[in-house]
Length: 147
Image 1 (cartoon, helix red, strand yellow):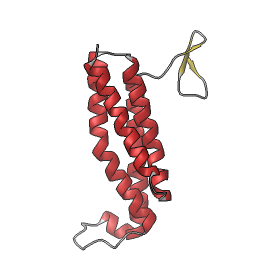
Image 2: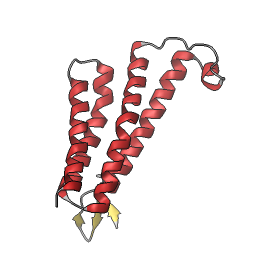
Image 3: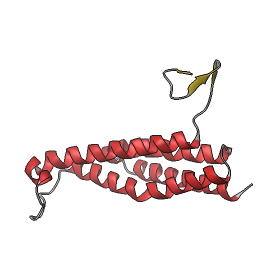
């Protein structure tokens, strides 16, 4: 099995779509990227010694961009458990169901665009990305409940 530049594997010359669990794995990778980005901006804004220390003192205020990145990360960790649970339930109940795949892709892409939308501070775009991600989770759940 070989892979093209796209993420879908090539099997016998046919491109196969990503599975629900592959999308979940990409969402985990996105969460790790959120974490690293948030930590990097946090250390840059508050200092390395604060980052490795016991944090007994109140932290210095972060700048606008670093604060937005931190809030975007917190928002991700609030929504991800619902997404992960929905995908795992869907995979157990109806593996490969179109609603499961479509909803998972909507969630993932909405979350990919969420951070740049939040950092840019464009009114409404961040909220639209968040709403799209929640719609993705609901679509996955519909795939679990409907035959």
